[in-house]
Amino acid sequence: MFIFVVTIKKKENTPMEIKSPNQVIESVLAAGTKKVRLTSGGNNCKMIISTMLAGAYIALGGILSVIIGYGFPEITANNPGMQKILSGTMFPIGLILVVVLGAELFTGNNAVLIPGYMRKDYNFISVIKNWCIVYFGNFAGAVIFTYFMVYLCGLTASGPYHDAIIKIAETKVSMPWHVVFLKGIGANWCVCAAVWLAISGHSLTDKMAGCWLPVMAFVALGYEHCIANMFFIPAGMLEGANISVTEAICNNLIPSTLGNIAGGSLLVGWIHAYLHLKK
Image (cartoon, rainbow, N blue to C red):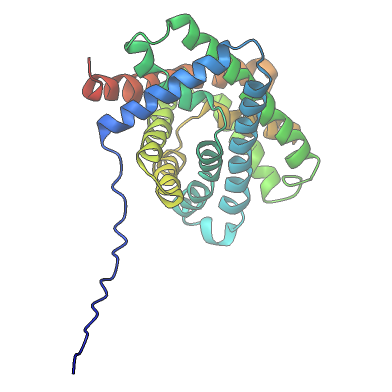
């Protein structure tokens, strides 16, 4: 009598390791080259649509952060940190959509295009051209979303959101220029670090977590993100904030944009390329 014993070995589902810093740089190099080619192509229709989507996604995160962050005044009145946590928890949906769905975001490109430029894959003019096209596309997408999907929908027409969005907008244009600039550095340091973390991941969960944590931090800390402000300030102005277009541009968008460029390109793009990019 023969007895056959069959041993079944269970296959282990070992989670895939995240990319190393060197592998992330290689992925960034490929992404930067693709972005520059898309900008330099004769037909920029796809690029423009992608930039407008990114602006709309960030505006979506902005209005969600207002609705949830300021929607519980009985809880947050005596707990100001709670309002910051609630807003910070909601806002990252914008960057998650940008990264996962492949939209073109100015602040992310501030870092992504730097390693390729350092390796001389493309010149500085190509970088500036990309940044300019993406910046104004983001602005168009954010403003269009704000007008049609926030203002005309009445999302901030009543309290507590009406007063909240006006206060947010007026506060953003009343800070000293150097403060906005420094807060801009902090914001894009966090945002581009989030992009780096998302690139290092493989699964949707990895990418969402990578985007969520640093972005939540910059919102909770009150840093200034120029694309987000393309939602917050126009939304406040539509609701009656005492802000002129000149004030919006000169007092906030210019210093926050310059700060974002410095934070993303130097503190993330340049530093990580210097540390991990092969000659």
